[in-house]
Image 1 (cartoon, rainbow, N blue to C red):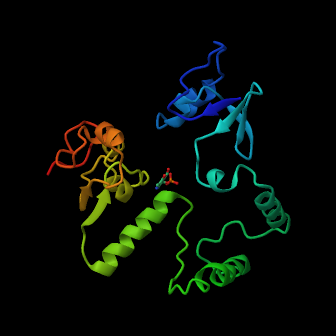
Image 2: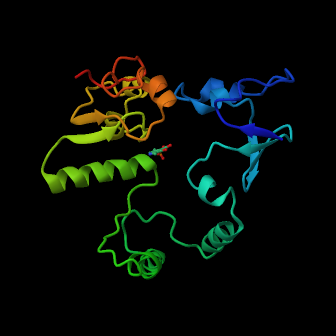
Length: 218
Ligand SMILES: Cc1ncc(COP(=O)(O)O)c(C=O)c1O
C-alpha cells in the first residue's frame, strides 16, 4: 500500500503511462494537486483510496469530511441515500425546509445549549472559503473597520477576501487585483524550520523577504 501526500509522490514508479488526456485536453489549467498525484482514482472507503489499476493508497490528503469521517462513512452514506430516496429537497438556498429545522434543533440541543453558548447559526455556501468570506464580512460589520489581521503561512481559500488573507505568492498572483485591508502577522506557533522555509528567516523581524511570502511589503 502506498501513502498519498503531495510532498512524497511525484511519478509512477512502474513507468506505465496514466490516462490523463481528458483532463489535460478539457480541464482548465487551474489544477494543482492532481499534477502531483500519479493516479486516477476510482473509489474510496475510510482512509483508503483506490486507483484505476487497483492500487491502494492511504489518504494523507486529509480533505474536509474525508479527514473527519473517512470516505463514504457508512452512517452518513445511509442517511444520504435515505434522503435522496425520499425525494428530499436538493436545492434550497436559504429557504425554510423541514430537514434544516431538524438540523438546527439537533445542533441546538446537542452542541449549543449544553455549552451555554449564546450563538446564532449562519448557513454559508458549501466551501471553506465561503465560511471565511462570511467571517470577514461579519467581523468588518461588527467592528466597523476594514482592516483585519491574518496569520502568515495559512491557507484560507481562493476567493478574493480569502486570498487577501493568504501570504503565499502564487495564490496571490491569481487574484489580478490589489489585495488589501489585511495586516499579516507571524503565527507564534510555527516551528523554526517551517518558519524559515515560509518566510526565509527564523526570527519574526524579517518575515516578508522571501518570494513565497507574497504579502505587501511594510
Ligand atoms: C484552513 C482552510 N481554510 C479554508 C480552506 C478553503 O476551503 P475551500 O477550498 O473549500 O474553499 C481550506 C482548504 O483547504 C483550508 O484548509
